[in-house]
Amino acid sequence: MDVGDVVDDFELPDETGTPRKLSDLLADGPVALFFYPAAMTTGCTRESCHFRDLAAEFAAAGAQRVGISRDSVDKQHQFSEKHGFDYPLLSDADATVATMMGVARKKLPPKRVTFVIDRDRRIVEVVKSEVRMSVHADRALDALQRLPR
Image 1 (cartoon, rainbow, N blue to C red):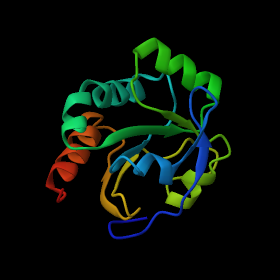
Image 2 (cartoon, rainbow, N blue to C red):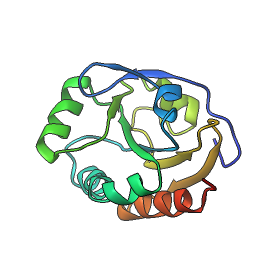
Image 3 (tube, one colour):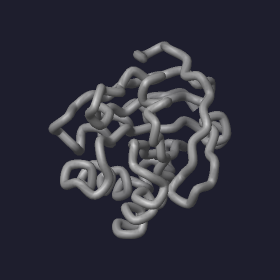
Image 4 (cartoon, one colour):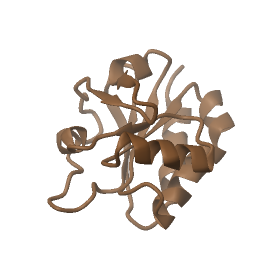
């Protein structure tokens, strides 16, 4: 998926097992949906913690952060508890959403990609980098700050 595409609504469990729909998440404003390969790994921890550390900036932009990986609900819960994440981590165990978004890989974790999705489910920014962890939150925030309010 790319800028301008409309994301189909989906529902996945978060780190507590609570079902979360994209449409419900978007009800409060745009979403920075970031796919990461695996919870508890060095790069994914750095990326997720950077999203956590920019909480005030995302709130000021009227947006929320949502992480997503193929990890189980239990693993997402452990990851969130260990690092004090204040945003949902969705479990896409069978890669349904990763496939829909075009970030799934055969026999490998999903690509590290962030989608900034506006309230109308239209993608306004796509951030792709497997190695520069902080670029995801930084560029997502920049795109959100440019959106008309």
